[in-house]
Amino acid sequence: MMSPLAAAKAYAQIQGGPAPALKGLAPSSASAPDFTQLVKGAMNDISSTGRMAEQQMTAHANGRAELIDVVTAVASAQSSLETALAVRDQVISAYQEIMRMPI
Image (tube, rainbow, N blue to C red; front, side, top):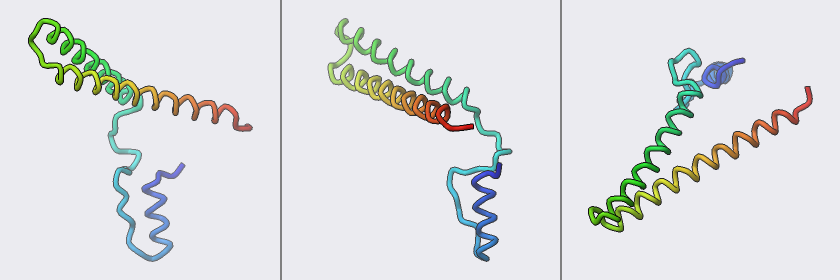
């Protein structure tokens, strides 16, 4: 299968113009992190924001942190978790759509 970058260059050659600048698209031979590494990194980030929120709540209970810091940390953890759930839902939806495709 042709990469998006190669397809864009081929199209530009056919049209006789310069190749379009496609930001974010790199040739498939580039050393980009694989999907497993991306998921592990995202899960680590979500976990660390959750731990930070717990630390802020504990510090506030001990009188060492302001309430605004706790609210900010909890909101950040909630946002990270909601983002992960949205991505999960989209992955499941894509998988189900693929499974419905005729062979």
